[in-house]
Image (cartoon, rainbow, N blue to C red; front, top):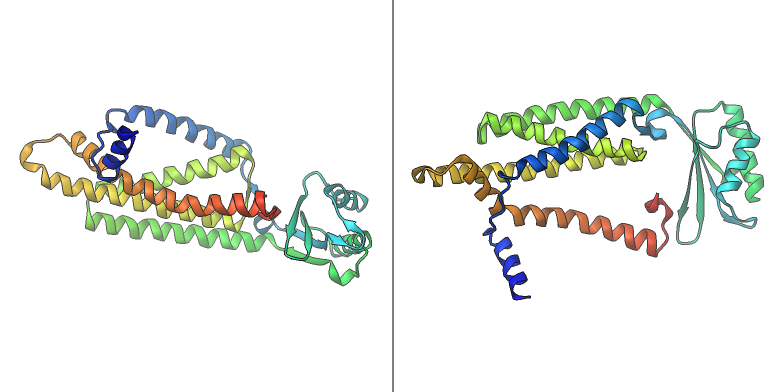
Amino acid sequence: MKSRFAGLGRLYRGETTFDFIGRRMIGFAVSLVIVVAGAGSLLIQGLELGIDFRGGVAWEVPSNSSAGELTDEDARAVLDANNIESTSAKIQFLTGTELQIMRVQVGDQTEQVRLAVQKSYADLAKVPVEEVSVASVSSSWGRSITEKALRALVVFFIVVSLYISWRLEWKMALTAIIAMAHDVVISVGVYSLLGFEVTPATVIAFLTILGFSLYDTVVVFDRVLENSKKFAASRQSFANIANISTNEVLARSLNTTLASALPVVSLLVVGSFILGAKSLED
């Protein structure tokens, strides 16, 4: 037990001696496998874009009305009855304090079909037609948001490259950009492999990953530059300096990861599995 606490103490004091550089080929191999798998999935099956990006229509129906609680099968039956492909429909149950809402999303439909489905859901839930909301999203909106996000991302890369080149070295700036691109490619590849739906919230998550990736990269590079000057007279190899620097900031990187992961896990566990918020579970 004492040895474990001693190990944690060494970790948080930056006194660990992990050979990151010596074992870099293991990391390269694992990373390459994930990147290739993700890139292959992106090329073959692409991403599952949400309604905000591909356009479509969504109905929101009170699920716990006088007709009783509606089910997934009820929602799909209404779609089938109106000649809409139900297998590709996305159905969510949004739970509030007093009311549960069933949200049904499909591809774009004509105004006549939208109104017919709205009336069918109202009849099914035994509520007035006005209580069944219909929302239509054009694919041009999602395309516009995507283009703006990409432009902002390019500007972000340029500004970050210039700053790191000025503050550290141009080689570090290039490496930082590669590291951020690597992290985003892996994240997007996982979404493609697992078939997760890409929504505006997903784009925000990808940008958040960029932020954390850049933060960790700059922290390590700054320590490497500092130690390069510190050990200049001792003729230490650059590999040793990189190892020392990475071990010194390891605890800081772990703390950053935990600080961001704990709230997300808490929301998922407490909100979804304990309180039953279906939107979080989806």
